[in-house]
Amino acid sequence: MNKYKNKKIVIWGLGLHGGALGVTKFLADLGAKLLVTDLRDAKTLKPTLQKLKKYKNIKYVLGEHREKDFFDADFIVANQAIKPNNHLFRKLKKSHKQILSEIGLFYEFNKAMVVGITGTKGKSTITALVYELLKQEIKQKNPFLANYNKVFLGGNIRKSVFNTLKKSDQHSIVVIELSSYQLEQAKYMKQSPHISIISNIMPEHLDWHQTMDNYIKAKTLIFKFQHKNDFVILPHNLKYLGSKAKSQVLYFNGSNQDAVYKFGSIFHIKDQNINKVLKNFKGLEGRQQFIAKINGVNFYNDTCATHPAATLYALKKFQNPIIIWGGVDKGADIKLLAKTFEQRKIRVVLFPGSASEKMLKLLHKEYRQNFIKSATSIHQAVQDAFKWAKKGDNILLSPGAASFNMFLNEFDRGKHFNQEVKKLQKQFSANYKNKKLSKQQIIKKPKQ
Image (cartoon, rainbow, N blue to C red):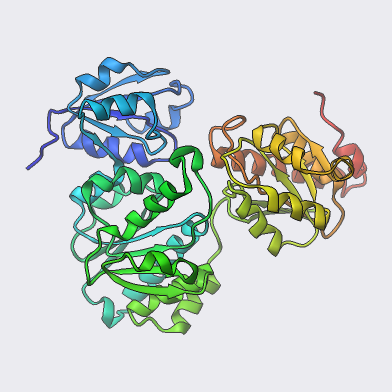
């Protein structure tokens, strides 16, 4: 039975990551009468709108939200960026309007086994590794996966879960990355993945959840509705959460690899098979992603480091780093990062924004004068970092903050960083290697 056919449904926030695009297509194919509303204009949303142009049952209100549209609707599908304390959201809840979510609708229609991964950091990497491991094991006819012949990837990893629904069935496994927002918004379905993994929990997204306690509660929704034959995999430092689980609880030591080994134990996957997947894994876009080497200087795109803890994690790995950091503060504690910057005398190029202002207040004057530069654009940040660098140095875009004061999102930030590095590489290759210009001539400070 299709309860959404001919129903008036508002898609609240189309976005650019693909989640709302997937659910919009899905509901349009079911015959719903859709109204898509987004505060962004048509020019900004053009890449997404182009993929919906064939549908005649979709209307658009862009650049604004009209309250009347929401109250006239039978259902509302809220984008995960809509905060619970949003004035209109609270008003709609109070009037008992039916507010749905992407993941909630996925649960409603899904027939496959679900493996869900969440956490503050590392969830995308674990999601990708689990997906690759299951693909390999199904192909190699692992007897403990004999009931399954296909595996799909989706969720917060920039792949819509709705792309899987038409292809998956009870003999499929869907591996999904779940953000705390998605978990919170889908709790009305009272469902959790059959196998759940939490990579870690650190203070994050407090601007959305308001308190750390709320954030932790949102994360635990990934196993709250599990059954006794399901599994949840947790790091040892979250044992106190495991006591609340109704499912079987497994613990790992704390690294992404350890989590994957523990997952593998459920299906008796051999260590050598897991090692093969780990060895062949090339990493993900925007996560310590190598971009180029220019005159002995390495450039890495770590734009998905939107939390200070992620920048700290990167600093453990890289020697001689120059960090491009800053943006909009998300309420995270940055004292440890500031202390690390000073102790290791890390060279930092700061973007404008409230997180950068907060960082500057914590740093001593002498350090600020010698190890901090401020840049008003990604072009200037890359140029200034390269001017500072010598052979063997590593330049990392690892901002530890939100991006929306300068970019559409963190992936847009990463895309612009990659473009600037490639331009610099091309310029450097054409001039410096042929001795036409010196390094300093090539990277002259741009006009402000």
